[in-house]
Length: 413
Image (tube, rainbow, N blue to C red; front, side):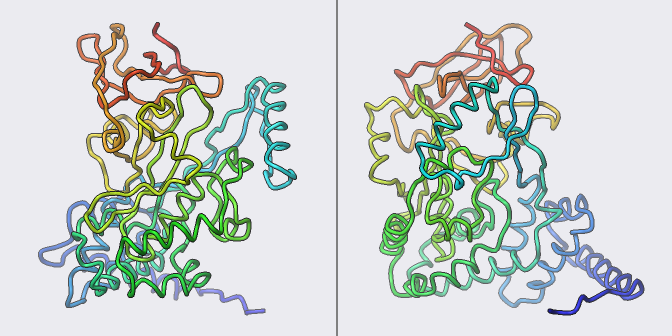
């Protein structure tokens, strides 16, 4: 057993003063830290030490690209977070449910349906929000920066513009999962897979990773109702997960190989249940290729009316999004206004714009589809002159306008 190391008070104070001094030096360096980086540092508590250490790691590099990578990650870290959920019924009772304690997907889903009926309806309620600025470790940021920017020496990868590398390959976060050093885990678990990074072009590497995940991992409906994304080592052990688990795995593998990748998703499928997530990888021609399991590709036919909207989870701040423009205390339906994303429906389907009426008291209205026996919001519009204008929606689906009050969707007509 390793001995426990106790830091003496004077030594602790010395360490703290050292980093405080370093932060002051960084702050005063000409031409100085970017304003967005300073803003995040000024709003961060004790964990400022970890962010400062990250900058200090690259401050004297002759090549400023890695320092720019550190600035990018920190400046866009504002309001990035991990959320932990409880499963609650209408009376506020909490249920602890382990999907793997059930022998099959069908037995678990039957149990969930029975419990949902008897309890008056189960919902996922956020228990804790953990900000990245308060918890992220310098080692995770530094390893991401070193790994992804060192891969640029690969002649196959230098075709990607650096802004795309920063936005879609560098980030340590995929969605709102708990932070972990997934890059190091993957390199330890699958070294032979990543040995191909220097030998194959991006398109071949994308196909290799997609095929590897499809061959070694499977979708399991027992994980659809879990309250959080599986930690990577747990997913590797189970060899099974939800669509989001598997999508995140592909994105993490692709980013570890230096390939820009993102997670696209449908929050709620129309006239169906649940939603759907998948990875999209940027090919050599700079277009995104959806990596969708063959059993789910039917959803993307133009005549299939299950997908109302498609969004892309992004790390880069979207200043015009509902998440960034709303007041913090202003509640919104699940996902709409909870993080940064892009509307990419038009990349997949033909779309139209539609306007719907609102009342004089409505500042925002929502577009809802029928999912899992209830109406759920999949888009929002700011009301102007009693009208909410929705953009890039698929025609021929059944939509209803709605408002969000008392934690519930209320249809307008």
